Length: 116
Image 1: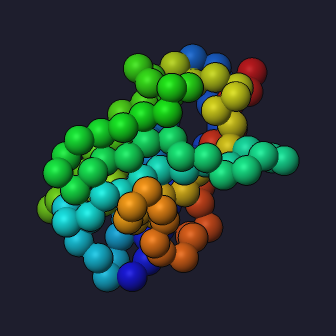
Image 2: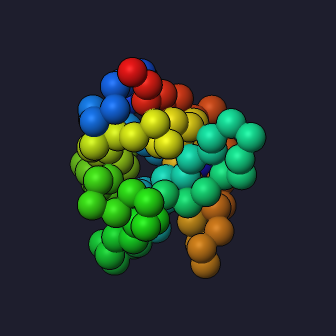
């Protein structure tokens, strides 16, 4: 099983991006899936999770600005990021999670840069 992230890029503060996480070898509708990010010089942090039952969780720093959901037909998980800030700059990764821990090997991630 693996995931492939895409959709990153460079955007000005206040802008928006939509990240995609295409999964193969797993059915995303049956698992809890999370987005993480890692900024330069910092540890990887959990950003958002959509549980197998559909409940969503967000880090306080992105609550109200980011939305996570999955498209079961496309077997893809998305992260809509609005009102982006410079501190959102990071490489974003997705992963299947179990008991709050990532399960799969990490993909390459997708770079998000917020800069004027």
